[in-house]
Length: 271
Image 1 (tube, helix red, strand yellow):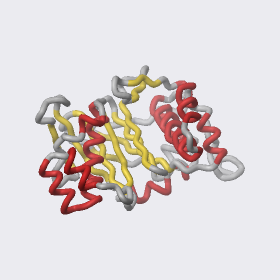
Image 2: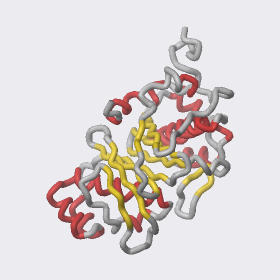
Image 3: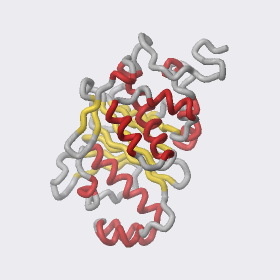
Image 4: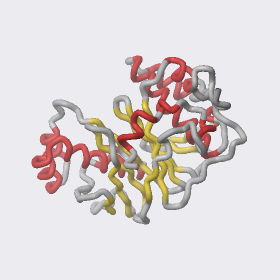
């Protein structure tokens, strides 16, 4: 039996202590793809890492599947962030910005953002650089052209007319990631100009409603999805995907089953 694994071949779901934090080099953003559909035993244990407010939010979901996915997304995010800080997941304390962006109240030098759609979530972590991330799945029947005609800048309307739902999805994830990085409200992002060939796009808001310079980085995503990460400034950043497996060094002490990541890691990871 592997020394970090239980009788069923999985590592125990508990925050490890004294194993030392992960390092996060300057100019790097770590991206953790999370598989949200997990067995009841995993969901139950992750539930114990949540704070009372998160447990209330999970209970308020009218759909049991949405509740379980919320628990997994928040629980895995807590365990991963706790591992960077060498702290138990349940000890982390969130603060919330004006428009709902979460942050670590007592660890401001570690910035993160979490996005999810259906059964996939994506956690982005940087060392002190404001970050936002979005992942979206194509929705059958969504009137992408009509929506873009109403809310997007003219050049983006043309892109959606010619490129269809995939073009819309790419533009939408860029806008959403940018707004989340800035900690602003979603409605303000609809008019933001994000047209460009990518995958790396420096942007500014010409209207000045969102100040500063930003960098958008299109990400590989599973089929039928689009994803983007946005960071403050235009200093180059290198996305890294540590979650191909968590059962080998340096991640074996994370104590999350590999299946919390692996089925979305391959499409996300080009190498």
